[in-house]
Length: 80
Picture (tube, rainbow, N blue to C red):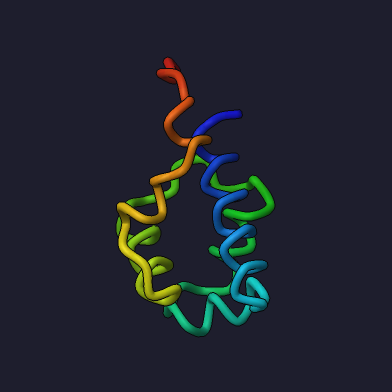
């Protein structure tokens, strides 16, 4: 799994935990619906930290909480 896939899965998991849709998260965070959809559908490859911070704010979590999962801990360096 790469970083984009981890971010996508984390967003989906957090939405499921909170019983909200991705579209609701878009409204809560002020990130456009198309951007959130591109992230969770794997179309966005370089997700900016500002966007992740906005999503975290919408979810009422810190960036540390967002990235504090075993999946992110196991990521290997990506060389492009």
